[in-house]
Image (cartoon, rainbow, N blue to C red; front, side, top):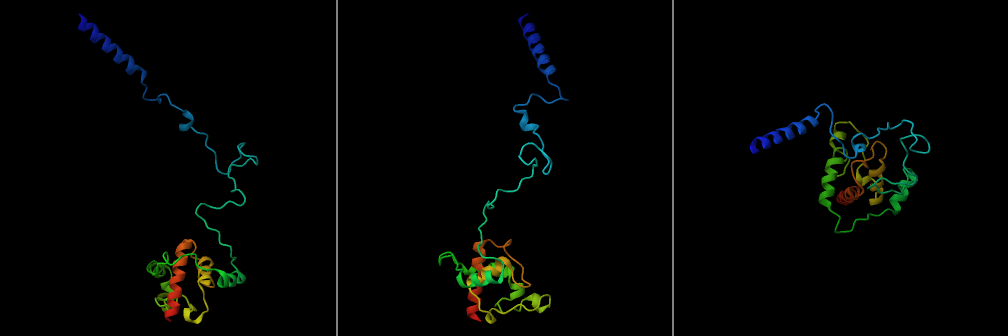
Length: 181
């Protein structure tokens, strides 16, 4: 008789528990605002900010994370200042001509050639003309860094492809090529 009561009790609890579960509706949510947050459209009107817009401009004077400001302007005067004053911040332990050569081979060799004579594959195929030889120019590490950062004439900027340290590595390698011409 006791086993019948136990089986009946167990069966009753099972029915009670299973009857509370509804597969069409979700169960209780802990912190429901995490699951059903208020969705703001980027450029919609809102009372969250003073000007009534969701999309806000960054604070004045703010700098992107990882960005290093470059104080020379993209002008001829800025180029001349960089040429005269800008020196490589890399010490001799960080200067790695192997890495500089590797980066030069990726980004520069197609126009400037492997020896810096301005006879790269694109120049030989006449896709670009007038690429100067490093031997024909008075260049410094600062001027090379400036040109890599901003570009010059038909050469575009490589600032998006090379971080500042990599630009200095390429500049050091270009100076090495210039000394060999």
